[in-house]
Length: 334
Image (cartoon, rainbow, N blue to C red):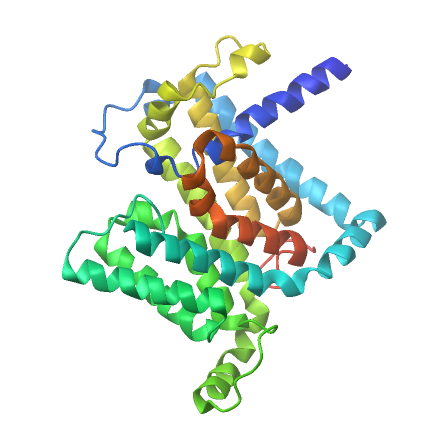
């Protein structure tokens, strides 16, 4: 029985790994890849994809039950209380990671992500300059609320400049800006001389309790959209990566017929399911901890590009781990 449980655990890990390796597959595959015809598994219902969908639904139900059981456990409550001590680091980690990403992006010529390259025009140069100064302000802690407001405006501009599909998969970045606008960084000294600063602080103070919840929801939506858009709707990007990176090791676990198409579809459903659970506030700390570990595990495969591009995601997962899902908009008690 232990062998079967071990095999099941390894299988689940195998299905979860693509969540990180394919998280932003467009970074490593040409965005001009010609869209081929979808494989049959993604176009027509079959026993295989129906079974995968049923498994995803069962996974959500199991997560709901597990959440209810763990929420009543005294040891789990003690761990949560211990983690709460690190929650004051949330704003520092978020603004620092986002600031570094923006600074690197401005130097490399992209906005927010390597697949959103800016054209070498005067308008593009202004956008990159705005990205640079926003990132610098966040890193140095210079009026992080105002810098985040500019950053959110820059993100909305990117929605207009680029196709919606790639930009939508970075909604978590918008969540960072929203969080910092609402929360600011309490660890920084208050600039009392600026009337604008105190006025803005009073304006957003009532929104502060919603900051963590919105960050969680937008991050969950980000994962769900990435899984649906780049694995289920347009699976060829992930399939292209598997041609150069043999990540599908399910056959080595005894599943001989578990081909690349099944691997990508399973990965998409896993990512979609985890995103939905995060949005609902179900097992948020546990899910974030697992995803954080999986992100770390693939850095050796994809290198600095993945590290820089995922910095804000690392920060978001850290915040959810230490601060929890927030007190608003959860379907169950946390």
